[in-house]
View 1 (spheres, rainbow, N blue to C red):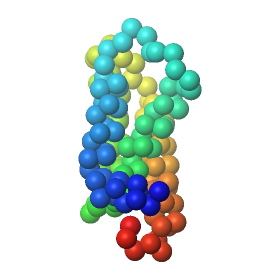
View 2 (cartoon, rainbow, N blue to C red; view 1 turned 90 degrees about the vertical axis):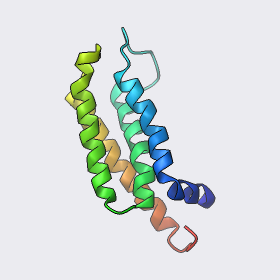
View 3 (tube, rainbow, N blue to C red; view 1 turned 120 degrees about the vertical axis):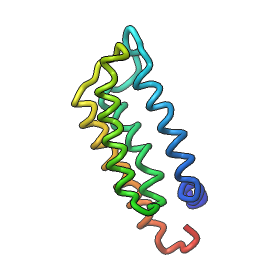
View 4 (tube, rainbow, N blue to C red; view 1 turned 90 degrees about the horizontal axis):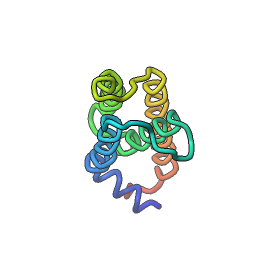
Length: 121
């Protein structure tokens, strides 16, 4: 587990982009109806944005909180664009995204505190 966290921490930008691209594509791709998958739309938003925040919060690069706020703004821009690409923009989605970002930061903080004794992380 520690080696996985170390990998995420050292390549946080790559992980963020790899997670962020599918979020963006899936959020803006026009569909007639959403596919039937377990969970609710808000749950999916929450999980996606928690995963997006985790690598940044784990690595804590300079101005990392600004990155997190930027992701919240980015998710708001996506919600504003969605009606123009035949999707539904919802402010509750933005709330789920924001909550996901907070939980991603908390999870990364917990991971950091649990491995604090290990100087290699």
